[in-house]
Length: 88
Image (cartoon, rainbow, N blue to C red; front, side, top):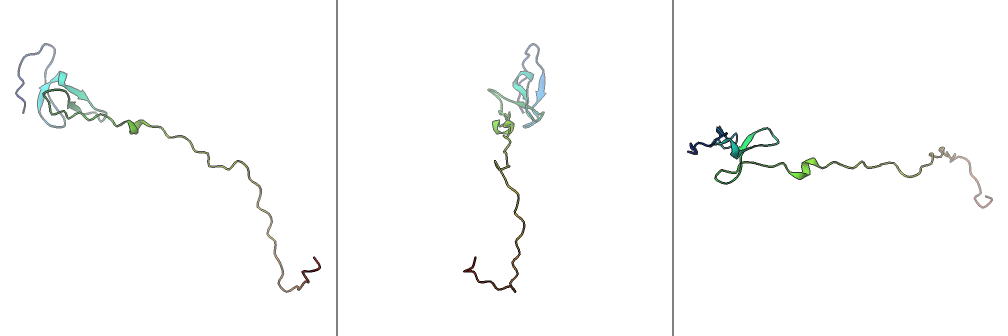
C-alpha cells in the first residue's frame, strides 16, 4: 500500500479499484468501465483507456444487385416424343 499521507488541499485519500493501493484523489481517473483507477507518475498506472476500434461504426453494405429479371417458367420436355432435330 502507498504511504502517501501528506496533506494536499482539496484532495483526499482514495483506493484504486484495480490495484487496491491508496492514492490522492488527483491521481485517479474514471475508466469507461466505471472504475476509478490510478494513472500518472508514482502510481501503478492501472488506467486502461478505451480502444479506438470499439467506437468504429460499420458502413451499411447494399446486398441487392443493380438489376434483376424474373426466373423463366420451367420448360418440360417429354422424352417419349421422338423428333427429328434436323427439322428444327
